Image (cartoon, rainbow over the protein chains, first blue to last red):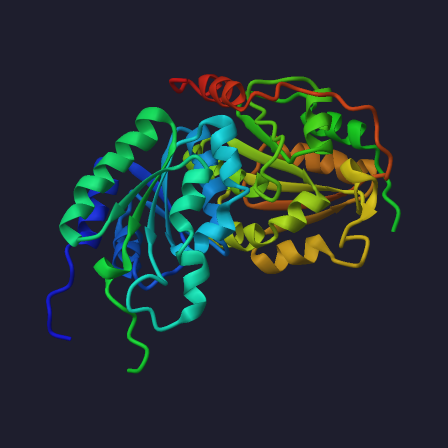
Length: 174
Length: 193
């Protein structure tokens, strides 16, 4: 592939920096690989690899108790792993911004991604998160900024869904 | 294997002479009641839910407050639910954090059903293989006193399994409004509520 890399991962990184996010939890994910690499390379961001996404919810609660802001990077399948832990955020009004790369919705090769991918938006809303969906790359910076303001201004969970259409399909045969 | 130490007395010993630089996150259920019984403190963040999350809350806090000491004191059932957190914490290796498991081998809150530690799972070995530098078996008063003294200085990642008798003392219920607990904790650290 000769096309230049997309700008949105770097724009998300800039948003995290402007928001003074100091802890970034993530389960490794192809869609977030560029953003994860940027976070790992930044001395002012503690990158925390997780064994499951719900750890990142609890991490963010602890960070806020200690005066730091945290973000969680995950794939749509990870949302299902977070449901009970999100009750911690609602019960205590903890802020969290999360960027979710979507699977199972656009030129998806793997049908096993569909069951969770198709219910991310209602599940996050039922968990009291404010949900924004970016369909095109140029929408990402503004929605990310809005999510940061919502999360830390109102002490809420705010999620930006990065559509599979925006990310591009996973290449299965290399 | 039957536990050896009384849970309330063990918690009281760990909190004895506590200073303002010690921040404590108990797990939901008995360890929250034990901590409340040892004396309420704004630097306690009691959990009433979020089972499996205590250790990771402790990690976020320990990373955000490297000049303070963070003790997660939770039960075996709560720790088993979030056992992956031991791997995550072992990789991050904060030097100002202790994870202490009050292990009575059962789920006291729900009727005393056996936990996996009663079935042979050894949490000390798990913590050691996850990279915790100091891993302690605490089964008598001398070992408990040693753990209490280590909590006063913490200079490396520590795990301890405290062998707890399988009795359930009367509950001592602390504040349960989450936003109140959060605000008072942050205020105690000098953060805006």
